[in-house]
Image 1 (cartoon, rainbow, N blue to C red):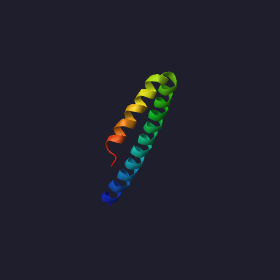
Image 2: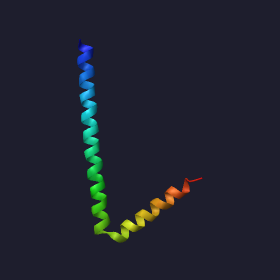
Image 3: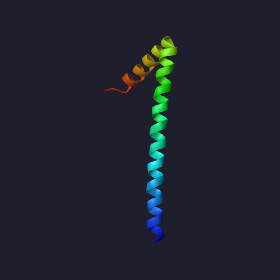
Length: 59
């Protein structure tokens, strides 16, 4: 019986962790979009650096 309870608690904690992570990623995306609007030149430079990084690993 304790194993079943532990499994149920593990599933709940996993679900809660996934919910918190999803919320964090939404907030992070929102923050990046806000920064891009507030600092367009810096955001453009960051996009260019990311694009160069991605090109480096293409075959």
